[in-house]
Length: 219
Image (cartoon, rainbow, N blue to C red; front, top):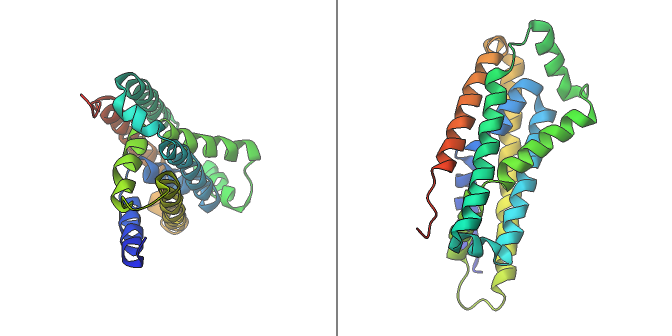
């Protein structure tokens, strides 16, 4: 791939990753509540979920899903159900006291257990892995940078997907660190943490409903 085209791909990918969506919302909400370490773990979970779609797209599974109404519908409803589930959990979460907020801030220094971090990682993973729109995004975006002259198109697809995800990982970590920095320095953010949970919950439910109402691209 020519250098100018590669730089264009990287720039476009960074701009797309900077756009707020379910991924950014998940990372930021966790970083605000739990600190930088928790936010970074959430970002890594999001990145891991993206790998599923990259490898699937590289071997043609995403193309099959785009052409199959049944495959798209099943994954669409799984993803929508999970997003709504996460949103409902946030909406029903109890308001945190000052002591609880201090404990949450201590997460960034290692006070949380491995099981808690594992749960955050897995939730981030499933947020992406169960979203068919992520797979369709890769299927639509990456081929624009793969020329017909390329001998091994699946390999090119895979390498571009890995590069996109690698860059996206750092963007999500940047969101996590920024949100954690704000949570430590802005008292109003900490005092209103339960309201942020409500807002994040409502947005997750909105994303889930929007995904559920997405039409099959072949219909």
